[in-house]
Image (cartoon, rainbow, N blue to C red):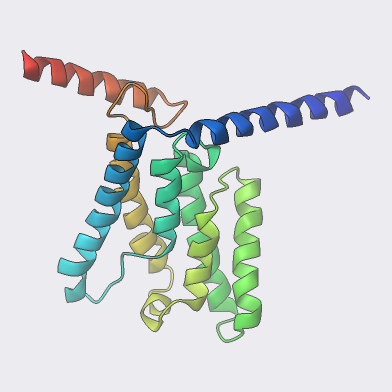
Length: 207
């Protein structure tokens, strides 16, 4: 009985937090929208720039579809638990590894590998507390992607996934901490230090 009450309290608390996050993220705020746009534009733009001017020489791929979905979370819903660094980075990397593993084990059975890669990545992210919805797309891309993507093997985890995720994350740390109303990660000491140093540099520059 006691355990049931505690579980009910936890569920209610999480529901209240989720409602608050959804409500706050849907408020119309021109300033917030500006920084969301700029962060996403710069993050995806940097990856696309590398893809266009450097990677053609080595015939590699850096820009994948799941980065667009990740950008919605890490630039547009920065207070969401699913957008935090552990979820973003961990979810992407674990899903990429799972996708490649599934493809290597069953390379020619797409009706099985596609759902298996996505379903397994979801469960692993849940178990490791790194749930990040775009991770499912990252796992799926490893299975149904182009021949170039499939030929990467486990290097797919390093590039494009790790490399692109790092670029998006660093960009998010910069643009999501530009004002006093934005903080990313939401519960991170790093965010406070970054913002303090930025404001200090801003004051010294103006003086």
